[in-house]
Amino acid sequence: MADIKILVVEDDEILADLIQWRLKEMGYKNYLIAGTGEEGVLKAEQYGPDLILMDITLPGEFDGIEAVERIRVKRPDIPVIYLSSHMEDDIISRAIKTKPSGYIAKPFEDFELNMAIKIALNHN
Image (cartoon, rainbow, N blue to C red; front, side, top):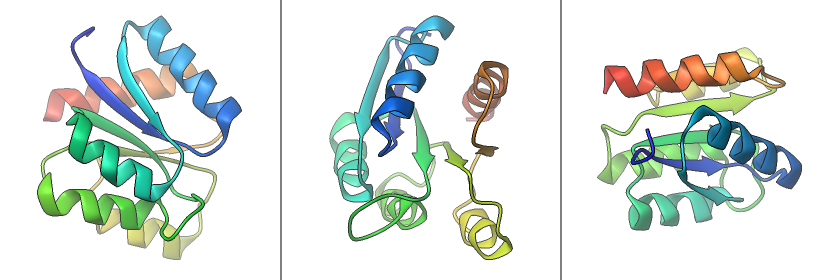
């Protein structure tokens, strides 16, 4: 698991720190944080992650769903798990169109995150 590269795109610094801690506790040691959709797209291109944990509501020019759409142009195979407190039908419909590997509602438990990551990586 130490060689799995995970990109976390989350603008809430406290939550990003918590996710980093959780990943470390799960045995993932190779991860990078981005705080905007634009930064997420750039880091996905540069870092070449094996998995992306993507917040939907992000500051900047575009949200997490549009960030995934842009990432998918060059990396259509990368598994993406959305992390969001939004459960509105229109947002979920937009997210589904990007073919994510998962969608976890915030707040989430360590077990939920761990299982979603394992399933996403196993399917890829």
